[in-house]
Image (cartoon, rainbow, N blue to C red):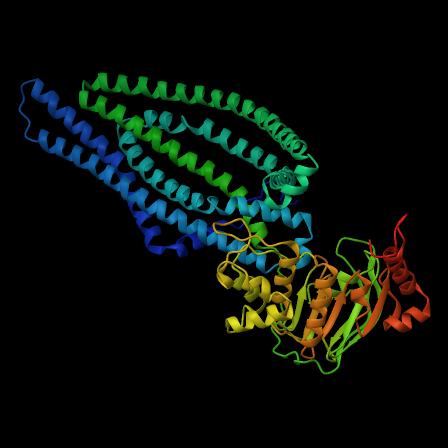
Length: 608
């Protein structure tokens, strides 16, 4: 069964890695918590004996029999109270610090795991659901396992030590007190499993809620959502989904209330029976101290039994929820090659696709169908085609994010999988159409393109020059130290075109031998676009460039143009030869050119 269909069975392995990570987070704090809770757990049994001693001595004094041990018992009782208070304070200190460290450790584990997954995982809704559950459970659940396991052990110590006192006096009283919390604990285990199933079924819906929340609260969605007047619509959808959650939760909680009430009645009856038996025994013996000790011990056993059995219930609940966390942490990771073959810089022969077929996982359509094409070393090749023709898929395959279903891709005569994954991605720099606007400093925004090499600001300025971004950086209030974006204090927002130039500088700064530009000037005006490509041509440094663009003013500057249609190479050549061919490229070019040359009614020909 999948994680969404049923709770994990007893073979689920979560305890050992959870506890190992908790202890590794801070062995000293883990030991401190364990020792203090154990010491505090022994106090109730000692209290029972001290209370009996005090009451016995007081009873003797009332009867005129002087007792020499009264104040010793009183001092012992006070010392036990002090020990419980001090031990509890030290325990809380250790728990608070340890909980933070454990949450940090598991949070980092989730991030590191996500960093090792492949692109296919991030394009899979089921993996996103697992990630959502893992993030939800990583913050507090692992520490709660340690806390409740320690509580189970110490509750067992307290339960056993006080029970031994009761058993020595009256086994039936001990049995009744021990059994009192059992119905409530069974009820908790049953409903914990039901709530787990409910939460797992709604994981995708919770992701949808987060998405709706982001649409209303994100600065990047602000302009469009307000202009379209759709914020109210999203809020209503959010409210409606929450109402659905509440209906389901309300029904489960109503059933839980009935079960808990019934369990409480049974437990109260058991405690009542134990009290009757204890009073009868004390009266029969005429021992007032025994009566006081009975009542103290019954309270202690009841509390420790509830803690012990409740700890079992809590651990059962944690186990089924921790299964969500470890289901994510145990996902297969992206296959990473550690080969040490370096990619030549610059390339000597170029890039070649040989009869490449590709189908995305979980689909039945070949996005690329026998594609064969080459990108000569030092040349710029433009890919042209309608949306869905396979252009972005080519980039994913070239960078090793996916592997071809059939065929092979060669980089300087060697298959791309012969290079190490890190080396391949260092050698292929990509400016994606949906590039990120990092809410970091201007320096960091560019330096991320060369994160694993020694840094100096001169590299940033050279890259900015190639991207026509030097004037943007020079005008920033604090230069390269300026915080970009509006999410953090002192942030400076850039225009869309300025962000794109900064992203282009990031792609250039690593000086990779292969440069892939996916709509690199979509946010620029015509003059800025011309300036950028002129500067790129001046500073190409023998880079091999793959260009994806829909503007034919950009495409026509390429050394070679490849026209794709439904994952196949349809036409290939330079601008002039393709125009003479009169095929698909010619038709697309004329379609775009005519839009600029068309004469508006009553006006002169020109660009719109």
